[in-house]
Length: 293
Image (tube, rainbow, N blue to C red; front, side, top):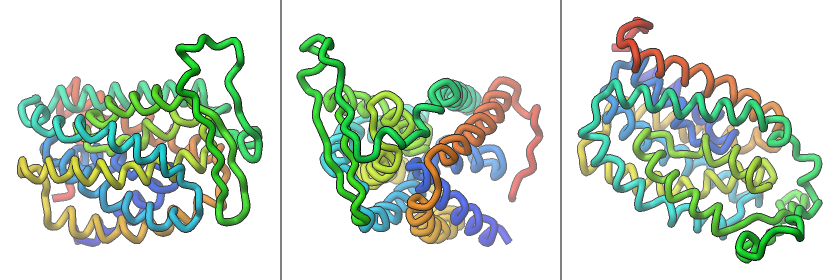
């Protein structure tokens, strides 16, 4: 029975994780802690390994769509690697309640950001086939690494946008640590921030985030494996099989669902899980959630 539950969880999480460019870790990690009673370090390590599987599956599917900003994805992955390797060693010495509390605060902070910026982040109408340029009044020190991108999807859609490449890449230095520490992969933070702060088209941000995740999540998962933080069976095997299938389905659904609704649904899930983890971290046992054991 547990194998079936994990497979279904993998499929559903894989679909949604790839659909929003998050890799599913922001759902998997808290679910493993709250409903499967996993220790924080095991939940983070196993979740990140599952994110690696999900992101590789999603990347293979997105590669055919032409939505990936390859240069940005590689730069983001390189920047994220150091933190993703360091985090498992710090996680091993941190108490579980502190882990849950920090994770809850992180998710609630993201939900707040998405709520106030969601209307802009979910609108692709002014991003597709229109070049976005920075105001000429910007100081030179802020604009000297501004880069323009032109992405042509396989369906003929052209995305043109401009963003500060150095700032976006530097942001991923911290994101690599956060993603490996919490076992989330970090896509649930990167995708909305790329859209709202760096003017990425939503579908390009989603595909690029998954592409980047496929590199550094795998390296971070290897670091967790070195620390014996991965539950190989049944969680990784059955959850991973579900994630492979879900990743393929999610990448195809992205082309059919409006970005506005993708980000709104992401907001609800992040808010719910953030509240759950914050309460569990501050008042252990308060929620008394059932275990899947």
